Length: 198
Picture 1: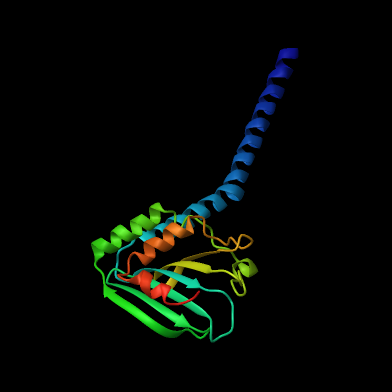
Picture 2: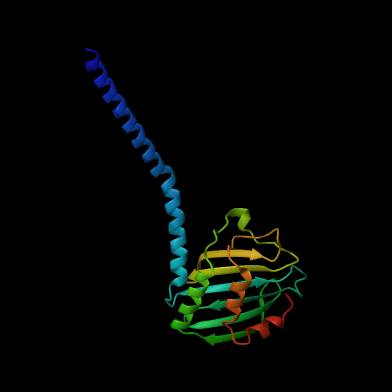
């Protein structure tokens, strides 16, 4: 008599335990794996875009100098594509060109370059949002570095950092190594950059 009552109760408790475990597993899948897979997907998209050697892909470095009077403000940008490499120096906040070096490129050279950038963790960082990603006025007495991965001229991922310790930005890599790699893509690029005071 006692056994006939215990067995159904035990079965009900086992069924309830299985149902609770299933609900917990479902909740984890719905609420947690979605954000994790979204992050992985975002990393994959930016890495894929970086390593893609199709003609419509490019990588950029923009360096802004100290925030001073318009007449004294200087910046430069390096754009590397599978077919070209360009360094342009600018004067003022309206980006009036001072000088430029433009040379051709080829797909194998571009491939080596972007794979080197990937190994140097160019796209490892996470883009900031809202006011955290607003670089206006950041590091007024130093340099601002912006790295971009583009497709069809539109940003796939843009990460930045600065020479000011309080404004680290979103780049999660060695800015010196990455900057040198970009400058090394331009023959006599160092001389052109040294000719402007950042």
